[in-house]
Image 1 (tube, rainbow, N blue to C red):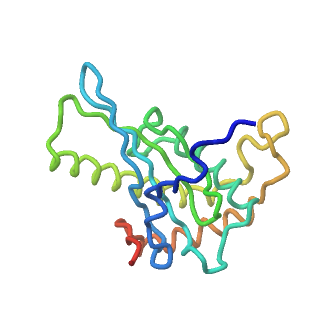
Image 2 (image 1 turned 135 degrees about the vertical axis):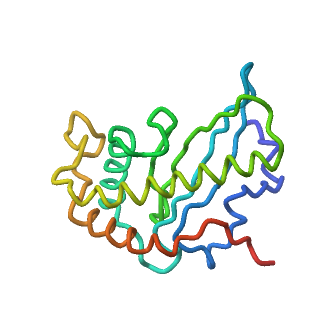
Length: 189
């Protein structure tokens, strides 16, 4: 058997583990920026940490609620009018394994290289748009009487859904949206 030369090396810490989860509150946080230069400008892939409950408080979403909310968000944000983030710029919506929120991945483009200040403005606007879109979606969920994409043919775990629970959670998330935060706390040394 060949030994792995990396076994004794200390692994690096990924950025999300530097966030002080003891002080993290519900909100919409820019978690990661991945720029890609193209001939006609730059495409920025932005990973959003949409935190719906305070971590480590035993106030987690159930797997059935998180799964249902994933279906509602992906469908609503991609197929309904009135959202600031265009459907083609919404790359991904999925629940966090810790059941305290969702990852949302979007893309924004710039026609030419941007100064650091212009990048900050672009990302701030994208954050405002994502927050607006989430609030509107949470409102619209209340009119849903069925779960999109929830048959055995459409979903890999079609029995793992709870529309009533998801709608109750959505009401709570919407109520909390007035106090959402937008800047990560960092780990205290």
